[in-house]
Length: 418
Image 1: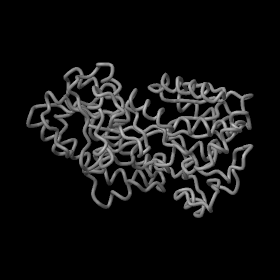
Image 2 (image 1 turned 30 degrees about the vertical axis):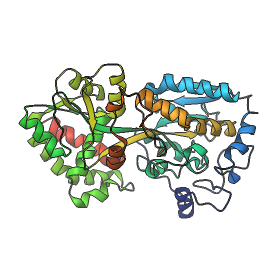
Image 3 (image 1 turned 60 degrees about the horizontal axis):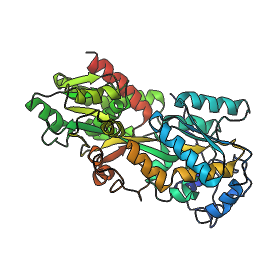
Image 4 (image 1 turned 45 degrees about the horizontal axis):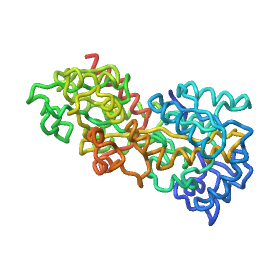
């Protein structure tokens, strides 16, 4: 989904939202002078310390409205349906989990806002690339959740305040994190090099193929292309890749300039590449012995490993120059008639138990820095996740999405189609 320009808010509010340093005992609405959500409590008095004492008693009186939680991640639907059910059982607050298509739900929420109609959901876990559009449409409650929710106290700073380069000021919780990795069959690949050039030189020396996902067909491919740009683009390109103020024309120009060495690199090594048309096809390339090295999403690898659908010797790795990771966010819908209950549900979903269950069942990483995978993942599945220390050191944020889209188109035209 293509989304419009930056959501602008005042410098003072931006600093407040990013630092969480409101005057003692209060928080400020993000992007305006007033909160855009109706609540029974005074939202400006909320702090992490008083959150539960202030919100929970009121939330438990809001039983006349059934909370609706929209969840766009099909891999998490069963797990989150169970967690929402547990929330209702523990709090007495009626809540319903609905699995939705992310883009369709985004448009549905925006349309409801534009029509001044009741929104179909109270809390939405949706695609990060839609957060800018929904914020600009007024769908997102302008409460700095990362500054007031007890279970959001220790978040990775970039994930806490950015969604694909959009600075939302903490209104969107980084509920799910994923990571692009190179997966390899360790029974065949004995010690995968940790540089881009080294990986392809190893493939050449050992007469092997590397499966690369078409960047216009799968996120593991576009993520890998961004990773390659970070490794190969000239120094004057690096700052441009993370400039989120660029217009589309400017982004196209940056992509053209920065992709030149990337195109050359892959064209020189094209005989070593097996291009695939989906994230799943790249994993299947490993499973079917088409290519023992492939560009994949870490959580996809973990999920399929749990089902026995990839060789048990398959391992993930990150290049030392860094590989991009992403994620998806969760927010309270501005028009919810049960703000306190919605806030309580959001905090519940960021809790230790939910975040750990999510990691254990699907490999969905957490942005909470106070939760590690160590001891939380079944021993037989732990090898299918990058070790925490390597993950924290080598994960990189996604670059400007407009640049990424333009680069993907160039890659298809100048490498895959040639």
